[in-house]
Length: 431
Image 1: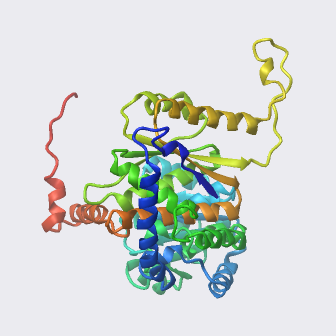
Image 2: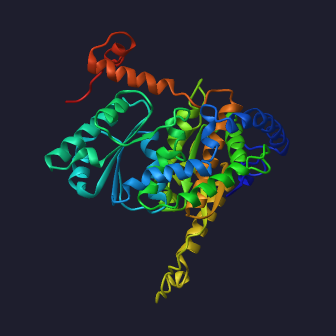
């Protein structure tokens, strides 16, 4: 993985960084790296997400998931980081058989469950706290669905949670296999832990290659933005944010990375949205959104940057056939991947033409190695950005308020929870 930051420099973009600003950032990043490197190596809370699984941990994990090798499908029930990480791995890397329930939309739940053959499906319920209301609600719906189909739900259920809490107690009561949720990793940082890896591994994904990519990302954290793509991305986006670039549109030129953009949006917003700070992550898809969102990027308010993700080798030889038309003969025999590359280049040039900052992240291909490196790099960028802004990148107090308020509404508890029923000023218009 490498990153091109040229179109975020002041010679191209406005606002933009100067060479002196980069040198100043590099000095800050070197200092921060000296402080956090021991925390990564010691596996301190949050920072441990950047420390790859070691060979013994990998073997123990593989031995654990081998007991589920007879299942062709995995239904993951979770929300936020408990589901997005594993969904990103399976959807990005083309692993079939992974179904995800991460919302409580009744229509979607009904449609999803009716399409599942539960005789061949492992239900993987994931919650760090063991009491996430949406996750628990969906699990009991699924359990009831299995019972009505005479499925032995206990032999089809894997619990992923911490060493205490309601879900942990449920697993003990019914003797369900338990995959420990590392308690020193926040959910949104858990993609490269057993939490995110389990469905991918059960369904045949190459864990070894993925972890090789993670180790490559780990080894690239040299402390200098001039040597580390991850640190360069974190430093540049943070500095642009300080200069008024309050939104970052992540625009991959690969349909495989669509769920990745959802994962990135959670990582960036939940980690960095603190103290009236935080760059709003938005999602786009190249080349599709060149025909929609590009209008805003190029001609709208100058508070946005674009992060392009380019895939150098799409591993396909698909080409447009010869066209017998004067209007379109210039397309004859063009490879689709070459056309997609030109789409990215012209969009990049279009933004540079009006001074809109952008960066380009390049991956060699969509493979376990490259995706492991990308995910590790994004987490390292996020952690660095939090350190540069002197905020806690690992908590989520605003999210927790919403959880408490929801539980208060459902149980009738008083205190801050009861404010949820009174905090909305109603002003209805229309029938």
